[in-house]
Image 1 (cartoon, rainbow, N blue to C red):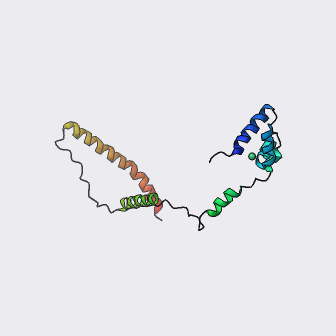
Image 2: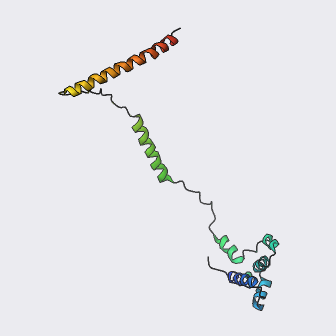
Image 3: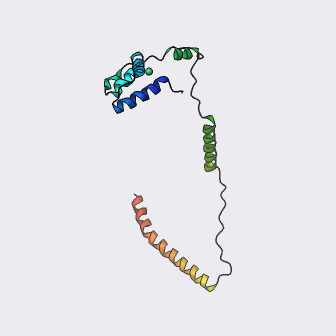
Amino acid sequence: MKPSPCDSHQETISALTDDGLPFPEALSGHIASCPECAAFARICDGDLDALSAPLPSAGDDLRQRVLVLPAGRPARPRLPIAPLAAAAGILLAAGWWLTRPVPETPRPAPVVQNPTTEDATEIAALKEDFDQALGHLAEPLSVFSSLARP
Ligand SMILES: [Zn+2]
């Protein structure tokens, strides 16, 4: 947007008001004929009521340019189709991946080949720990079982 002549007048008005200097005759003449610059000068002078002054007319030039605009429906905001399609594709792929049938293959039992005596000792200790843990579980299980039965 190119600056209007009023922009430079308002810069001058602001600078002169800040310095407490009088307006030159040409600027005073413009202010007398321009409601926008007159309101700006009053605002710079501390008249805040000028802020509520009605806006100046947009002018015939702007009016003519708006009237020349093509008639018709305003453009609808477009949906971001590509990102939505990509997101839907990712969701479908994730859904398929999570719900796909997975064949159950039995896991082979661990086999210790050529166990050394150290391995055999460790396996025996693990078995003993496992049996001990089962023994600890058996007692609470019997309590639950007796509670569950009427
Ligand atoms: Zn002006």
